[in-house]
Image 1: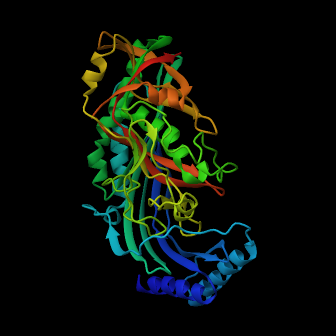
Image 2: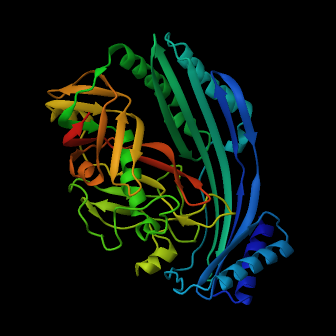
Image 3: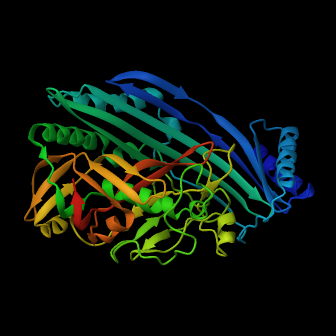
Length: 471
């Protein structure tokens, strides 16, 4: 990668010569491979490779960005010229400034016990076909079985005019599946997503076959034994999957600093949180929601972000209050603070923006059994089949897929289509106990225009909510 490093370093130096007060360049190579199995048959296969350099400059108080997939010095020079020209032509009335950050010089990588590149696509297909066969051998009707496996090997080199020089390698693995279980004229559907940073060993770490089989069995039980979910105000225990989607949608997104400043309004939405709302009460003292890129093997793991800032755990809600926003260098300057390493791009050809990474409810010390023991009458929602949230991430709805009636602390029969519809503060304020069974699902963080769907994970432990309205 020495040639690409030289081009990145050249781009930064040349941008300074052209009058940029700040310059950065990012080389990125992605080597994705993915396939789809439909009912056990290979339906699609894609193997690709993409590489290029993106350049961003700050000149005369404005930003300019340009990119190229032609790795010649002439073309990189032209891209720098374009970025500087864009910045100088913008003529902003309010100059953009960046928060000051220390220069970082490092090389980091995610270890692979079994390298993704060493596993043939035939072996990968056979692995997922074995999972599919396990479903067909359960003895009940699963008419729709859709599996997608995707892996990617991402190599980057970043440099800026402040002296940062960062090389990185991130292998990522993801399995997504959709199942439909049918009984007579009725059916249940589910969708799950698992993500991993590392090698092929992720398949074993997930226990994928066991998870998929248990999901199908719970769907069959719901069809045969499920009853109407109770309605009215009652207690609700939610699983890591449900606490995870709530953490992502009703905490992660509304604490993105660009949303808080109103800059995402026409692209991905607004926030019910305002610029002066740090410290605002949004939940009970039991609630800590974090976003942490440094979680080992989480699919959105990274050591430094795409602005060269070191990553750390961010407490978005702490003890039920808005604690900090997800920041890049531009938004951090607007808030007179420091970046917390939350700037990422989906590839070299787009500008890095404020993004979530691995967002989750921080676990505490209760077992699931202890959470249930405190419920006289209520519902245990183990998974969801649908969620909706408004433009400001304030009014939310979660519809249960696998759920059970709880009476006197004991799980009874399955209940179907439990719906909880409430505001973000009402949801988090109802939490009175948090479990220790931390778990994660894979996911994507989608925002910007053109859209960037970027690897993310979401999770948490089980939680107990008191006296919420179910329908």
